[in-house]
Length: 177
Image (cartoon, rainbow, N blue to C red; front, side, top):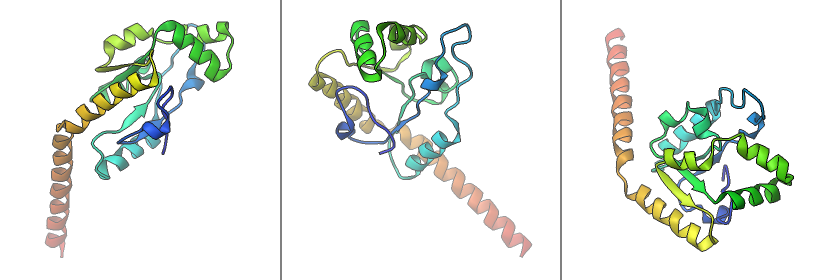
């Protein structure tokens, strides 16, 4: 699998779609120009297109600085923030990355506050509790996305455009022959 989910869910609980993780943590810096123009690049777009063509209804992109970048959100139909209370966030970051409290706080304060991200997100998963509670929220969101027919319009437009371009090319080749 191209990526992983952090927290208590683990890889074995990815139930559909694909998770593509793009680590932008190298963009962290504490200073006046904290976030420069972020780009996930051609690789991410190729992965999305690949899973679109393979028939997946949705693709999960794990982009920690999505809201800070302000460029990619316009391409997202749904945004999800995995939230936990600030003390849990600090503790997990220190444990996972081996950071001191000062280093972890600097990294957290360099980002948009979680409360603000929660307001901007379409869906929120509260990851403050136990793994089972979080898993239930993820399953509920998965069911909602699987039942949605939003993807159909995009897929139909893509098929229509492909058939139209193919027909035009066929017509032009026939005229030249």
